[in-house]
Image (cartoon, rainbow, N blue to C red; front, top):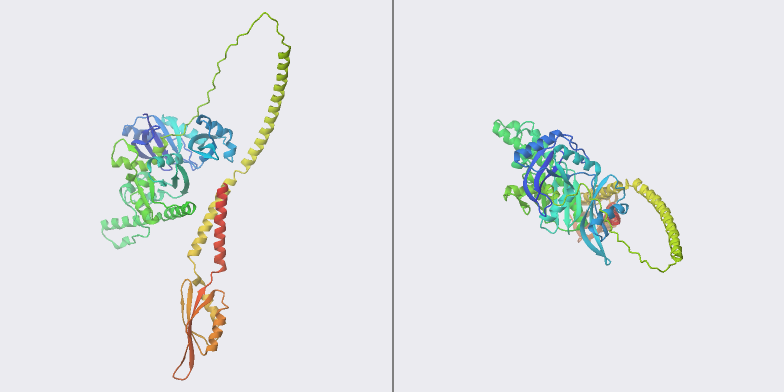
Length: 576
């Protein structure tokens, strides 16, 4: 089986792997990581030709004895459109033409300027009608052209491109045994959380945090050398555990208190671990929020999460995530179902780091589409029946004339109808293009609703009825008789208890009547009323009373607002 290079270019690091091409399972022969030259990739995932990159790659290939000249690129770009659609059950060689002819039914914008590729994702039956679920990937022609130019500059033959999300899904189906398959693909600037169930991507979100901040902290520390590159820093975090198991673990020793150089280095190392651990707090918080969103949407228990990508080589990261998320996170050697050329633990561990490189070579998206070949019909000669008898041609001529007139009329009607329908289609397409911005508005709205619901929940969990205790005390001073003596006031989250002494029982009735006018709580149990007389003959009446807080109107309104927001978001999601 032919071998290819699978290359995934990142913002600062590039992953290269040698694998079998179009194999049913990934087979990894060799892999390495090199630095990505500055400005080689822009924010939209489009690459620029770089002679520095080409020289660096060829040097590394020569050093490792890799001679293949075929390449598949893994594309990371927010401009790639990936969508699963349902179409009638037709032959696979007609799917692409069908999707292109009916693109306006599935996409709210024109696909001009995109290279469209289709892959059957499943088969189903609705009301007795067989249908196909097709995964449609649309890659901008500018990105395709940029990778073609880069391959030409490298002296390689470009045999395929694959969107990172598509490659990730194929490897998850191939390598992860659980029914609900979950991965964290952690790269330089982002972490993609993906859930695959029943052979389909059910949930995917991106957290805008990666390992770049870890690498930056290692480089600035200068504990492992001056002017380290991102690649050098990655090798450091791969061989040394530079983070604690929990976010709250820190080391706050002042370096100036130590005198020994070795002790100072040790303190600096611990402070470095503290800084790196603290820097991971936003990532953990973001992941926790996304997992809670998945739990609300799907209500399914997550048992294990696989850490892949560059994050999988960061020593100690999976243990920290396990501690903070409360879910087992595994990396590296736990993913060993993919075969490797050298059956060693070291090579098997590389599968997690080069996860999407492996998936891209299974069934990559073709860089050119095969044109349909028209079948040439074979004409058959007709043999005329010649006889000596004379035949009348009047009837056939009349019939032929009528057919010609009918054909002309039908042709004219078809042309006119076609012109009208094209004009209508162009008008509708223009309307669709004008409203394309609504997708971004809807996405922003959904995110805002989710953030609002989260903020209200945090506010509810961080407040209690005791927040208004000062107001309750002021109201007691205002409404209670002047001779009342409140001995103790015990308050909890739900209620409070008052121990009261007054001069006579009539005042007790007045106190209870006034307490029942309070809107913030209701009067509950009243203890036995006891009357005593001191040595001076002064009488006093003692009793205790329990009061239960009444939920405030603000809390009820907030809870109703959250419910309405979630229901509205769910309804809009189902409509989409």
